[in-house]
Image 1 (spheres, rainbow, N blue to C red):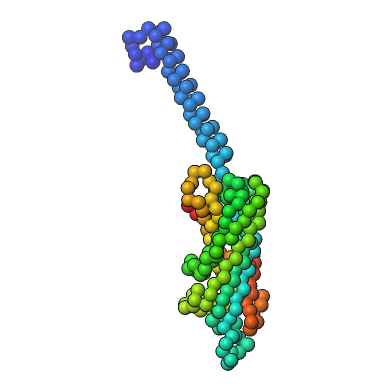
Image 2 (cartoon, rainbow, N blue to C red):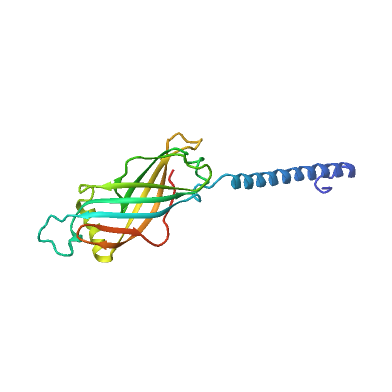
Length: 219
């Protein structure tokens, strides 16, 4: 300090040093406060990507076209007349009453290789328990038109070759978040692996197996 300010007296240098030390101490306090505030804020604000909805079960039931009198025992490889998906999901308690309303609607879309096959009608739910995990159901039915063309053929080939198929899904629920005005909160789900346990001539049935797929919020 003396070398930098040769004209200052020792008392002035000591006073200047106190000022510098005070400034440094103040800056350290401010920095510590900002770090602590950031930590507390991030801890108290829920990470929506970690609040995952789980697909507890997905059941698939389809009806093949049995009008062909020349069909063999492998008639389950014929084009599908209709198909139905039954979905059971588990909503974590942190979302109930905060992101998802206690009363509202749920809707689901089912996809094959990122192509939407069908979207369900609105299913109403009510009287959810605030802050508690909930189980919700939703179903969708696809017609011959929905399953026609290359997509329907690929699905049947997957059944024929591997006895399994994978379906993706999206969920749409009534949005109760204060910071949004969308009215609906969307969730994108991992693909569910379905294994066929019944391949009769009248019906095709499959159910999900393995790890439960998760659904995260899609902004």
